[in-house]
Length: 335
Picture 1 (cartoon, rainbow, N blue to C red):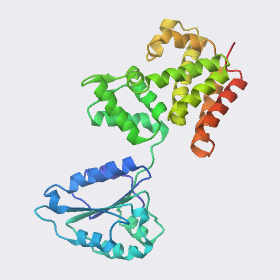
Picture 2 (cartoon, one colour):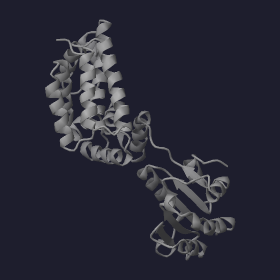
Picture 3 (cartoon, rainbow, N blue to C red):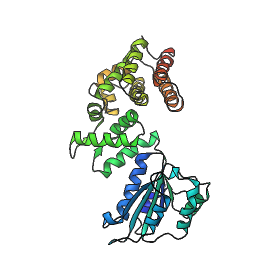
Picture 4 (cartoon, rainbow, N blue to C red):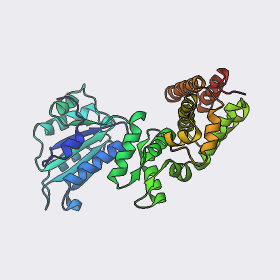
């Protein structure tokens, strides 16, 4: 059997397998998966039936001894070994031996960033159907993840709010989850989280600076725009988050400009693009300074900057400065 991705379906089964291997480069995803499995496995007398180990901080035989022990006053014992990507090859035979005859009254969870499926141990665990892999969340999936996470905790959040959060924070799930809890506390029970709440609660100051950036680009004031970016980065802001907020506003401008090209009125635009913030007139006036082609090019430049931020060793300030130059050189601003 190949690596599995049906972990949620597996958890819904009434019986637990004797071994689970959970792997992901995302520590938040991995921690969540481990905790869900532990909660379903360790149902009684946790003080007597829980053992947590970490590779490098224990002897492998200690893990096997714990896994081979009978549970006390409970149906199952929980044994967890983390950082299995650091497990040395010389220790594999011990786990292979246990794999051949695992204890039916123990859930042995092995977790880590990855498992080398080319090794004898990796192949055996995968063939037995014990290996689950959790892929990194892609940018396009963040909004859906936020909506699902909000439902899971009883929160309500609208689409525009998830889009703004996704663009500003990116794919770091731990930060996204903290932001969601912060917003839920801010709006209170039974209220729906909106993009205005996101701006006010999470990123109000930074969003206004990004708006200043966009205005500076429109005025061809590259020097001022570059200064604003440098101030944000020097203040500890991440380049991807700065870029995400800029791209979010550029997309709004693009939507508005397309409507203007079709002859839409201000009222029509407000109805078609309802989440324009507290000053929609300012945003609509800004869109009038651009053409559809210029905004399309600006978004293309932003996408290229996103790739550079994620794949090169250049400083974030240099990459964002280059973005400003690329946009300016194409004449995005109409003077």
